[in-house]
Length: 438
Ligand SMILES: *Cc1c(COP(=O)(O)O)cnc(C)c1O
Image (tube, rainbow, N blue to C red; front, side, top):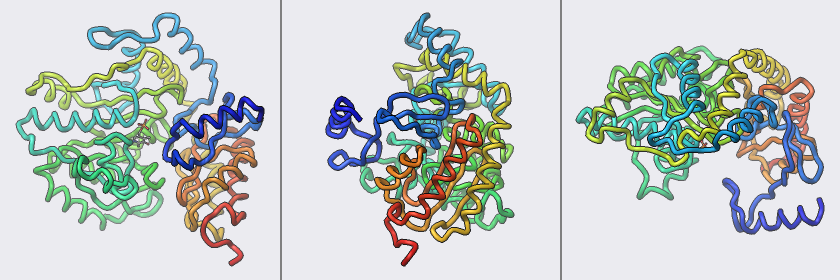
């Protein structure tokens, strides 16, 4: 680390907010110089295998020639134009591509800037839908505990009430209805006992609920839980039966991560509204999409406002759309299926045996997601430093050490990730709780 780097990090520490860390006493940040393939190169010289895909967004690796080209070529034509009254080929192609891979009934696409905004858009669509039908009393959302849908206000109002610290924002937060988190494990025999309470909530609140929102199959930031496809099927049934729109938040699960193109595919259901984000540009830029059915779009458009009330400045940014198209083109080769099943079998072989480890509560794997839930909470600062020493970038939270490697990860790279996890599990200072010896 040279003097310039130290100065930069000092400024960063004193003036730059980082996500979910204190500004007065922040966790340290590592200065990145560049990234290539699955590697993140630190300014201090270390090369780390990325186990996080930069918050689950990188699919085909960093500094990818095809994605770079798409960006460069588009930048020579135009970096941006407004989307009001104007349109362009990158956006038209992107919407065409998204409709082609999405569940059939989803025919209309609203592009926006980030995952949270796409959730806001989905929620506003559902409220405007019922308003147009003369049922503005249907303005609440029904969801499940342990969910995560983003950090803006409406998105936050459907995040887990405890993890999302709802009490702080109580006076301005939408008051929504929460069902217990799905219990049936993805890998276990389905037992429909839990549906009794769920259906009761649909019955009780049908008159005031506009939409049900859920992350299909995998609850991500709210606990990395994999639940049973039959649960999702039941949710779809209840939405039909009780006149409630179904919003699938596929921001983390969409585009292959779980082993199917979308989480919804595991249950063979179609949502009325679907959110995509994170992976949409292969991890290059911020872009999100909210897809909906003809019925949702037409009902909104025939309503009082005559249009959908949303329009971000950078809607359908051509650079972002062009790089998204390049990423979807790579997905279209179908290679992702072999890549994910290779990652899945590797993680199954190397992480599932950790279920016998004294410090592990549960280890689980689905598609390109490996989770080791520990008994004690991790010591973030210490464990982060250890992972860097071990040559990997893994960022745990709470009791969750998890990886979602880029699709292109090979055996050696995956091996470095799982070895690092096994190593820290044997090191007491990585955890705040009692040490193994006690
Ligand atoms: C990350 C995430 C979001 C929020 O996306 P941002 O781009 O961070 O705003 C919403 N829903 C799910 C399921 C996510 O994983």
